[in-house]
Every structure is written in C-alpha cells, then in structure tokens.
Image (cartoon, rainbow, N blue to C red; front, side, top):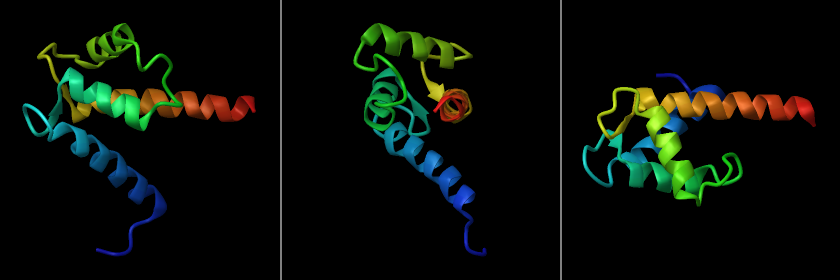
Length: 95
C-alpha cells in the first residue's frame, strides 16, 4: 500500500473516531445512545448545537437509527457525518 493521501487519512480518521466510541459498550461496531452522545459532545462540540441537551441527542439518535434497532451502525453514522460536512461547506461560503 502506498502512502495515504490527505483525504484517505481523513476518511480513516472518521472510521477510527467511530470505533473509538463504538467499542465501549454493547456491540463493538455500533453506537448505543450513550456512546453517540459522548462522540458528539467530545468530537463535534463546535459543529452541532445543544449537544449537552438530552432531547437534542435523543432526536439525533432517532434520526440516525434508520432500522430502529436501538443502535447506530457505521452506515447510519455516516449520515451524520455527511450532514455535518454539508453544513460546514455552507458555512465556509458564508464567511
């Protein structure tokens, strides 16, 4: 494998952050609500509003948990990542 590009590095970083939180409780490759809350409050405090508010976390969790199994898979998590990226992109153009 050749040297990873900056983008490949960032993509791997997203996967690593997901795993850093998903391995803590329950299934090692999904996020339960508590893990999602920890990830959001620690990793996205400047990006998502009201992350300290449990109702906000509940709403985000419900939106992401597409199959309603009470946990967020990586596939479900990348929906949040894409939303955050889209907002960040829009914000850059506002500056």
